[in-house]
Length: 322
Image (tube, rainbow, N blue to C red; front, side, top):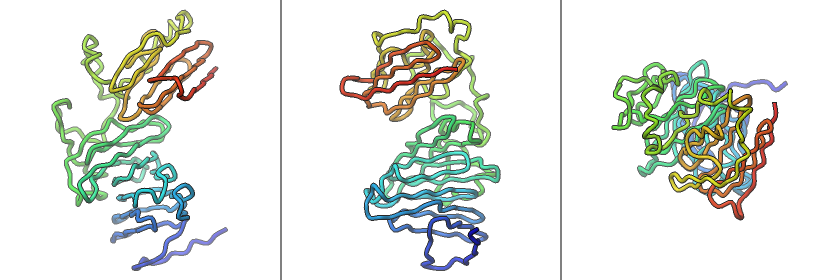
């Protein structure tokens, strides 16, 4: 069994995989050889699960766990490491980066507040926050989401009213106010750490105006599925019915909830998500601009769904049974 050795921090202290960085009343900044940096605030813990820099983007990799407290991460020079080889996570979420800055604040129970930050030159990148229950994509400065548990999907992103020097552990106990737009709800005292799917006012939804608005992952609701009609629907559909939204073409079902196929399809940033929840769940996420053909057999019900131009694209086969 490997013995744990505590080493006081100092300037130019080397760091290696499997190291644990824990702060007390001070802060630590770690700069990796690919120029990625991690700033660890007071009373925080970071675990270096893995770090390999080979000089080749395809074989270099990084895996970090933000265990508790607050850390700020900034990716290094573009091209030194494939973004697919960077694994950043909290106890409840995984964070996919595309060359940008973000901060993560984690409380004692693993609840994670993740905020997309502007870079030094003022530009803003993009991150994906996901777990087994779902994902969101953050694309605007100070946009944030909360992931409470590994089984609860990230909350709908909101923009917080704060500055870079306010990124610390106090966000756990005293979250910043949201910046509300005209499309947001009128309650300006909403607390991001208290956001819940129970707050969604389903009665306020105007179905007559459904096609005028984009759908989001919050619209995926298994309660709307017609369980009684499951055995009687002729779901052997072809791709003869098509819909378009945000530059994507969808055939074989439609955007939003399709009462015929029982699929709910939403566009989230650069991705399309298709979910069908009845006796079992089908949950598929693909790039919005990709060409896909989906053959889905769910408990004997067959579906053919096409995304954009299936010719020359990839084929995805899903076979599911109870």
